[in-house]
Length: 343
Image 1 (cartoon, one colour):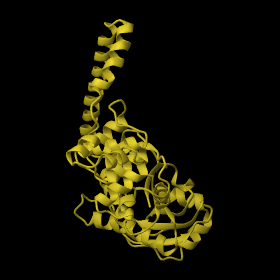
Image 2 (image 1 turned 90 degrees about the vertical axis):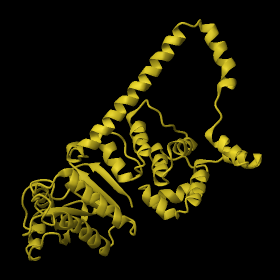
Image 3 (image 1 turned 30 degrees about the vertical axis):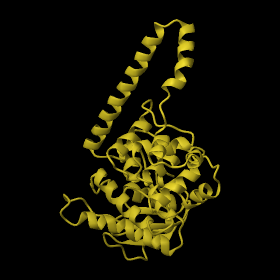
Image 4 (image 1 turned 180 degrees about the horizontal axis):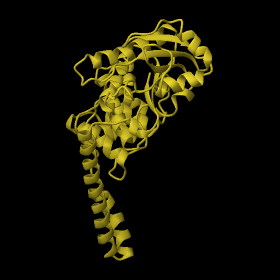
């Protein structure tokens, strides 16, 4: 755990195993296949000659040779023929069998290219969907860091409809935020400076809205002591309480958040731990919190969700649409050049 998207040359990724999108002969070719053979050196070709090729959907393993990895796992993806020739099942098999081989050889990390999405013609958005579905299923029961290595941002494509929908949501909310800022500037520009200070100071107490948490506590007639305790909760304490309330196990939560087990252990053992914003957001997604509860949890880590940046608006978009798939959210964040959540 977890699944991480990175932009890099796959021949330069340091990990236990690198996956080669090979052809059936395993003797080298173009694209990723050719690049890996050139980087690994002649020893790789000599070992591949002893393997007798590989069927589509299957995988074979060799040494890493001159590559910065212990192993190279060779898998043969399907050629896209419209989607009716078992392409999805064969592509899923490529990822699954590669992961199984890595696990058999005690690999803690593995790097994949986007298999079949080059000269084999598999549509990139569909190829990515297969990769994420298969890898995330595997990670539910295994501890491994998995990289999907993309040479450039264009290699990762979410559907045009989703991209347009998110872009429209961003544009609308950016516009709302800009209009609010302009309105505030207009009002303040017509108030004498001294009056602004006095009015602001006088109204802060009167107009400060009660927190959603306090309102809920009062409705539930919880004790004042309990209310105060919850107000003083740290991020770690609130996270652990929410996990219990949702009836989740720790591993279910950190895996859904795409968080490494070691990082979760740090958060659990240190009540004063302050995670990065993307980590706090990932846990809000894993817990499937509504927007108010998500804001509250994130605020415990010292952050907020606003309409002043794209990252926050994209997160709000997915929560408002009740889509809590961390991998799909990361695909969208990647497409809009934003930091990813989770790992």
